Image 1 (tube, rainbow, N blue to C red):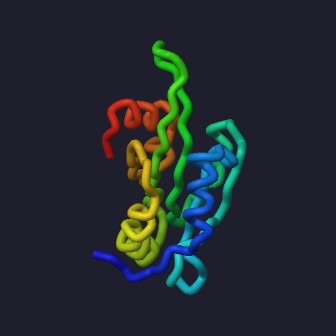
Image 2: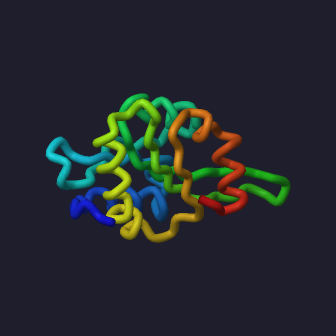
Length: 138
């Protein structure tokens, strides 16, 4: 199911910058005020994972891509994660709109290693996200 929203060109530009040029560590996306287009909410070069978590609103949905860097004994590795943030205390209409619009954005972002669906901050905690990235599961 798709809500028919458009994806602003800046969304792909920001993702390409993160993926190929490493101009950002993460990109947060949102629906515009009229809910008809997905736009970039924020990009950041901050390497502190807590800075990323702080950019996820407590009561509103977002999507994000995060360039996760980790070392589990075989050297430094990177995986680009897609995070669908839908907090439990977001409004139902907001959750439904974001859920039905996700694929429009997700299909444009080629090169995602794993997808994380999160409804609370425990599900986007670093260790939880790292575990999902290592398994490559949704």
